[in-house]
Image (cartoon, rainbow, N blue to C red; front, side):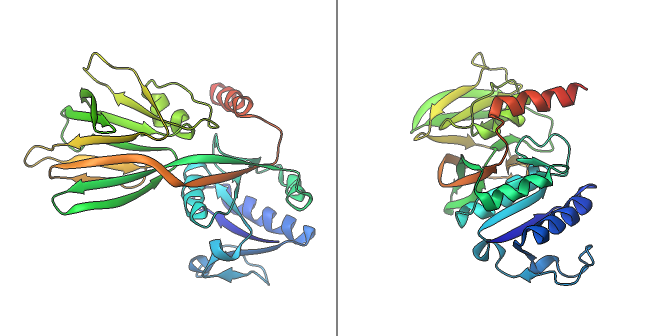
Length: 285
């Protein structure tokens, strides 16, 4: 077994958690490797550290160390290679974490096979304009269409399979997976959806529309959002909270289920709602 380790060292706890993870893997006799791009200035000083330029292809599974943002970025890369990811928390709440930083003794279960893999649906986001259709990327949580720098409401028409669903006058809309139902969509008033389900949810952000509740569509649906920015203004489009793209011309944003799935390793017996309640209790503490 070879494990690819992807740490996010911008997290304060990531360095000690990564060092302890390496120590544990060595004791278990498990080969590990880091990304070649991290080699210069790598903060861990130890003989025998291994690096590769093709981490996702060469590894049997991936260990991501950080918070939910780190996990999502890593899982999307791993999904292309159909590699499962174990998320070790070095952040705050980290809903997607399979192991906390003080539970590294559980890594032994990677050898014994005492774990399950949760398969999570992803979305594909495309932009269609006068230049044709192009893929913006994939998302595990959500795609957000929102107003840009101007503090003005947007007028957005939403279609499902080319049939008009509604016109929104709002700050924007969030289109999310079941996994993303506990992210921005939840803050915008959307429901929590079991991540084992296959569906697409649309949640308006601060809308004046009478239809101001979340809408849930089946996984085969293709949503189209008409973006019609006024002259000199822009509509913002972001996937999984990554850097937003400013859309300054008329275009359609097409969102549908991706052919790729993210796979998360779950070592502990906790189910989704156990984790949800536990994390919310931590937030209230």
